[in-house]
Image (cartoon, rainbow, N blue to C red; front, side, top):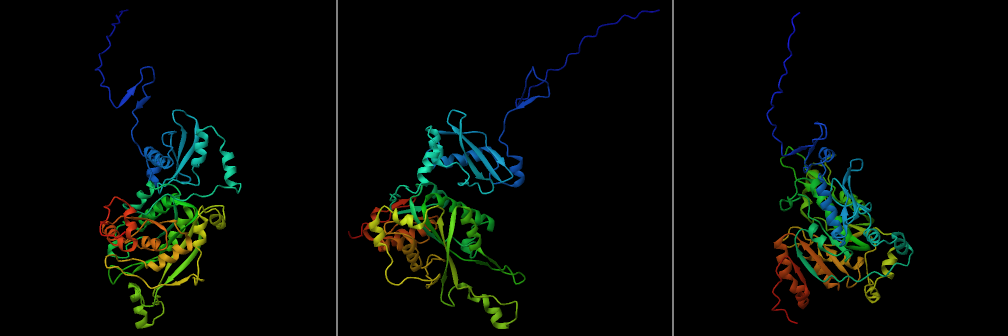
Length: 436
């Protein structure tokens, strides 16, 4: 039998692997455990649902901005934000800075990127937990009916050039006593074609109403002049479209923490406005199905910032009872929700509302020396009306040409007090010629 000698084969030399700098393999762990550097990634759920907030960093940034409005950003840190696709929200855990002790959370609407105030831990509770106090004691004092008196706002007459959504973030919390405004139309005319879609328009309105909620005092009023808009047809083969904007606004107000109070109808004289041609087809043919009413009204929607306190509480606890007495309505007043007012016109603005409308709202829903805010100031009608009724005003306008009109006309209706107005983002008007 022939014996075959077994030869020992030398192990072949394998070429040295190049290490991928984007990953690291632990020598002591199986080769299938690869640790990859963390990258900025959108949540799979957030991407599939087309949320406005896709990234963890975005949720933290929004929560940080919310904390900043209450001067808590240095004392509070974050846990790991999580998206809850059942309710379409992000939950951002709040912890004591430098520790892992949880003290609350910020809840963010994933679609709108707005902080849900009703579901977010209240700033007072966060502050109490930071100080090691029992937040239930403070809450009990606030709800016992012996709440402290409201304070007079220190905000002075102000004109701001800028986007109201951002400008409102810089205003102190509960520093405004009444909000009255008329938002821009959605694409009703060429001047207003600033929005890619009606949904984007409503989202912008929601963000502004959301920010207004913070600056408005407890139990005070937000009044909006708004009406349906007609989107004209592009050709004779298409139908025009009428959008019920007031009803969509109503839904936003309720969801953003306001209680519905009244729907006032501003009635214009018959034949007033651009929409008089809407009924011409029916007037000529008198055919059924072609009837379309000519709109001569606009809505004046009245909301109150949600509170458990009655309106009487706002009257009794007003810090200036003399102003309350001097603000009583004397003489005739509107007894129904039909207000007959002639429309106004301005050569430089396509859609001003009459000063009479602003005066009625301000008289019925504020006291003397209160602060009245208009986040869509236009040519300053609300400021003019507020000044004539001994109220202060905050006017925010994004269009420089309208700010210029406000600054040019202000000395005529405010006089020497123009010198004391705070102008933000725009030049102070020339007041050299104003007589003291």
